[in-house]
Length: 102
Image 1 (cartoon, rainbow, N blue to C red):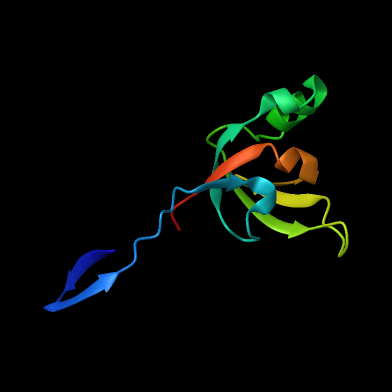
Image 2 (image 1 turned 30 degrees about the vertical axis):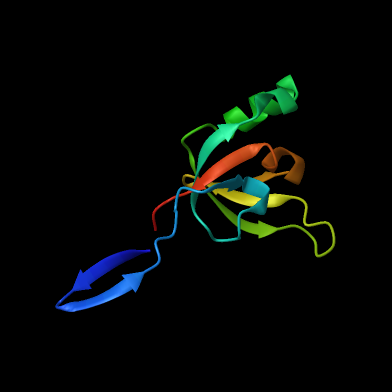
């Protein structure tokens, strides 16, 4: 916690680490993030090429939009920049993201 001063009123606020990393498949729906890293070794050559062609590369802005069926939750619709793409949860599980500023 750190002190904050706003117009003669001093109070304590909790600082939330906006740069905490998580996996894209675990990111809450509607939460914007930036791709920090991708574990390319866990993907096949064709799968990795497909993700790159869809714009899923380090530094790209992503936002999970909705999940598949009620029981399997696969696939995952993700906004990448201005484009909406569908990825399998197995592919989203190798993508590490950081929360971006609102």
